[in-house]
Length: 153
Length: 57
Image (cartoon, rainbow over all chains, first blue to last red; front, side, top):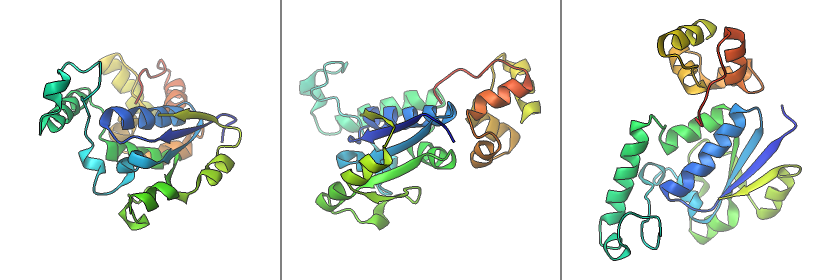
């Protein structure tokens, strides 16, 4: 397909952490670059059927947050922050995380889940969205990433 | 797709991205990537004679 290849590691599941990985992967495919994404640790939320539609954004300990940390930690605040960010993204016409995953799949990008993280968090392969290519180890990742530029998010 | 790209450019002054190309022309994202193996948005824009699409999505 292409000479260039990117391997993106998505290790966090916040809205603000998942989107950069998804958008970078999609932009790679749009530019004719081969792409695959490796979801590990909390990044697994992005490809977990029950979690993908309710990704949150954490304002606690975030120096760029407009909200004081003391307030951001109150119950429900994370939900409000997520709703606010989602609203902005909807206004911009950004696709949802689930749509992004479908688009990535259709564009030929490959999505993989981390085996160790799945065992740690007791996630079964059947819990993942159907667009996931497979469950792989860190070693498999390096094999797949041969010749690729690696991006960690 | 080419007709849609031209129409969209004339209407809005912007070249459609792949997502818009798909919803506007009825050709699925998968088919678009099969038709144009490399950078489909740019290839479609080139064939339609419109500037390359701008944006991250």
